[in-house]
Length: 285
Image 1 (cartoon, rainbow, N blue to C red):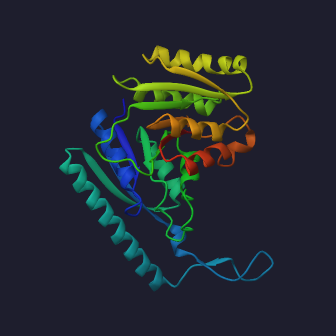
Image 2 (cartoon, one colour):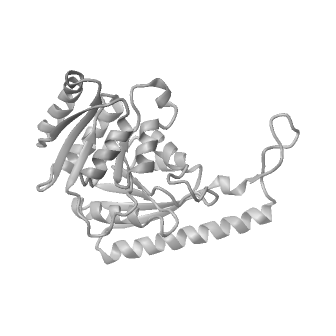
Image 3 (cartoon, helix red, strand yellow):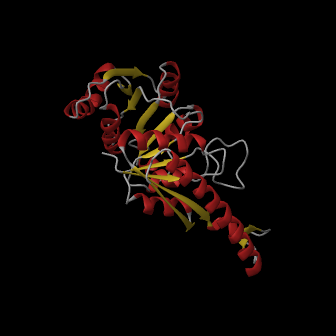
């Protein structure tokens, strides 16, 4: 059961899909929603000319009075977003609570996530100085990497009142994808929900071997998924194609694969899927 949902609010209108995901999940599960707005301490650092071989630091902290003014502005914006969200929850009879936190966003959200069952974040709208062309905010990677709970990265066009009917579980046999099966079993176990279990492998034999324990786990939780083995060397490409062509409402996957390097970096497959698939994605680190 999903008893408590943590949502990290972004700037409007970038957080509309994340809010709608929180409303949908809270209504389905009867969950409490805890919304936080994080004031990024990086906002108080100003880039300056300088570098490793210079006596000047690469960033400097503005004077105290400027910091206080900026803090006041950011806190006021954060409270405004939280108050609006609390009112929306109340109008929908969804129990909620709100909180402003200051710190390094990935660390703050990851620590807070321990008290909840799932984390919901927007794709963009957190970084005030982000490149306008970026489709994935820099906050997302550290949140996914540090969270012990599954992280739902909201789709770009998830509307309130929409239903989750088709779930795709991408499984590669890694420990991350194995932990993601818990979220898959929770969401796919409802009447009227279709679940597909897919892996990308070099052969049918290898794919069948990889999928066997995942299929057994879902079966033990009352879910009978449709299995698919895709023969390819480019998992992100074929998964994105499958999501687009199959009308997938939620893609569930591990955040990383088997490579040790991916334990330190945001996985290339994960980054490409988030950047090119408009659907909701639940990732487990």
